[in-house]
Image (cartoon, rainbow, N blue to C red; front, side, top):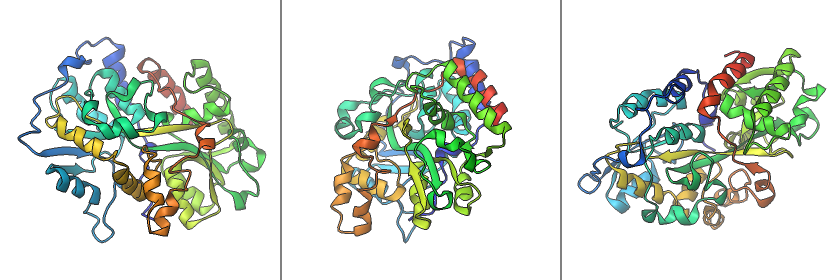
Length: 392
């Protein structure tokens, strides 16, 4: 197994970008929104065979003998002649938003042709008109192979402006041997034998859906009442000291060391934790869990849009998607890649095809939903309340 990756969903954030978004959209600044017909700049793809692709650290396949070598990107260049300028510069969604928003707000190129951000951040780009519509007629693999459950999130119906890079599940991880019982429900986190041994995510966007689901809320259309009910519950558990602390990616360390027995967790992280400790289990609760994605998008005025679209479609070839899934261990947004992995002569690689945290089975899929994102009108007050509970 590769080194445990930095969890993109668990990056701690302040209110900086959220505040900026509220200022742009909530205060009626007309220059912030860019109409669809004004987003595309001069496309230099034909005469400049390159593409600038920015991603998170540890989120692509690498050669075991050379960590600077990325086999799938190199194969793309060999196949198409398009050189990929690949950078791992995205360490935090809000930080990246703050970096590129001045250019996008002023209708200037960011220098990026393709970027990967969490879907709740992709929603900001889409709502502000800062992501270009992709040409699906040139993306046959995306049209054919994209996971049906990820095809039409509320913020981007029909996935016109975004395409999932990888997906994942926010659920519960626990040490079954140390706890001595099963966890089947979010409600199980609040049992007395877990007092002081539970952690939750500190980020509002990372934590709210699972906790609302535990209260029976339909998170595809949750309400303000659902939000405050969830906050009341968590606040009560904080006062009782039932919750040990709120975490970023460091929850993995707490769980591995035995400092906590159960926690909110990401499916991709747990696959790697299980390699060292088979007693750690991941649960999609009876009430359901959030299926999320981190998505590719082409920012406004990108200079190599056609090349970027070709790179996106390349990663939806099931053989390429299988190679990436085997490296990063997140939920693969190309279900057809499962057959490719299953046919591998390498037993460990073939075994990945049977892992429901990479290729969820039908029983698990019935409990997975894509949550409604927090709107710009809601974000400021909701973040203020949540952060007061968490201590941010």
